[in-house]
Image (cartoon, rainbow, N blue to C red; front, side, top):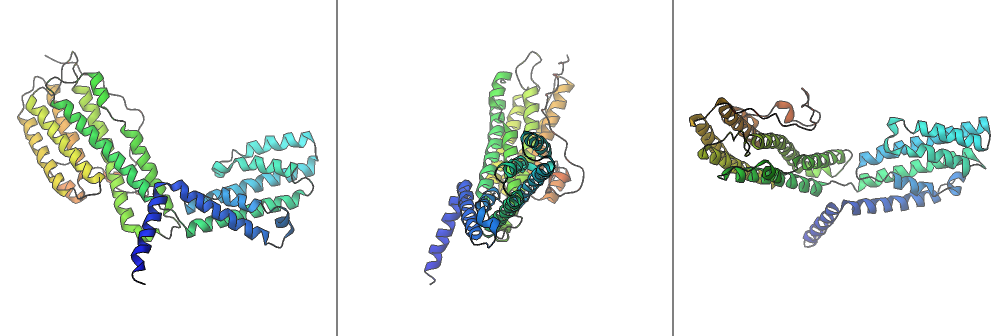
Length: 405
């Protein structure tokens, strides 16, 4: 018996990897199972509406088949609410106006308006669909038809919710993939910035543009995946088995998401002040540029450790040393004007903010003289209290400063 346990574990792991890599496959399996179960239950109900319209049960199962238990429950309830609303509208119009083109026009007009009711969400189309079906298909006995339509759809939706609760999905592989992609984009962006700074001749604006990575779409995708994982925990019996893994993934998502903001700010700053234009570059001394590049390379190394879920303590310590050297170089450098001195200070602050985000221990980050710890509300989950982060639209680079002297 014990010899069979490893084989079962391997099969379970293979199934988890298969459905994790192709989540649509798991959704298709659950939808098919829910539809078959709902159909079989409807055929065995001793009610005339069920005997006459049993196909609405599997329809409700399909409508209620979503990736998470919560989404299945929400969408099933909204679909049934839309069907009931459309059915009641059609019954009322048929009673008052009778049959004919006038009642059809009134029902379509009113149902279209009711479909805009926000609580119906994505299931708003069922208001108009149900109203038309009652007028056309259920004309011989509209009351029985509405009862069958709404009741059997509710049955199918309940079966879909039950199947999702028994066979829940936990999109861990999708979350890992999104986090790895975000970490890779951030690390590559930092390496590209460092490579541009190491050049003897600073890149022009066009070359800098080729080095820029699209960070925001990747960050948005990672946040969407994180929200999907969070949503999948509600009513999920498997969640307690992966509580520690989920906590670590949430921490990585928050860390890389905060870092993405800092990297975008640092990128905008360097591209603005370090491209070959008539006003010159701000980081003129080679030793200053090389040290900034070394700090960026060290930051990219720490990011890759977080991307892979490793232990970045050693590389974080190396980054802290590079930031210390950068602070010393900036303090001892000679500048041709005050603008260059302020720009160098802004670069140091931007790198320190990256270090502050990458410090895993927040107390350590606040105590580290070389790190700028992130604001408290960026470190908590969605339910955190405190002021919200600023809204982000399209960022505009500041106007170039005139070179004095």
